[in-house]
Image (cartoon, rainbow, N blue to C red; front, side, top):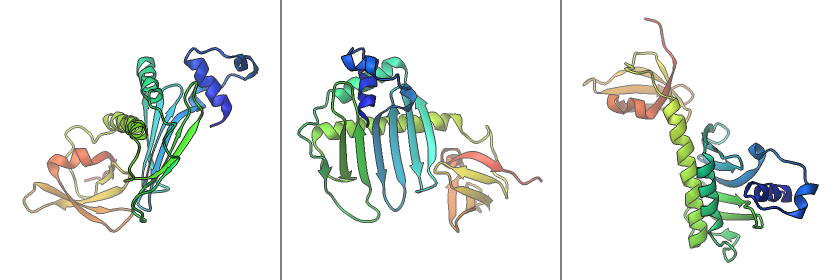
Length: 220
């Protein structure tokens, strides 16, 4: 994080400083306060908090991540910043090891708060973290869940949707599946991947929880 970002965050927090008059005003929509980026060969999940209260989550297969957005109110943003600033990370190592493997996530956390030196930490997904760092990571994860929940509420299958052979549905991770038909007991739905040869069975009751959009429907 560039020093200018720290100056802006100080301004947002109401803390005057002599350097403020020398620095151009930055757009808080572009200033990153927190960024937690975890990835493996299987996928990626990255949570970013911007200085204006926007939360962005990028989640899914590498190169094909879906983007989720949420907006914190001024009160929620101030509370989140207080929680982050309350953690003393001075004694936390910049790097922490842990189990290794192509399926094990590696994470990088970047943090820039008012009145504090920008800090970066690297760690394995299942590494033993300091209490302070684990709490900061927990805040980031809460923000990511908030963005995903907000987007899920905005994207759903049509009310009363009844699966029809040939329908193309979008799953929560962005993968597309075509409806093959109902199972013999008519309690489940058989679907086949559009982009990859994957066959799945989903309970009709769980369909709206697994899939977020009807992308295409074959005319009767």
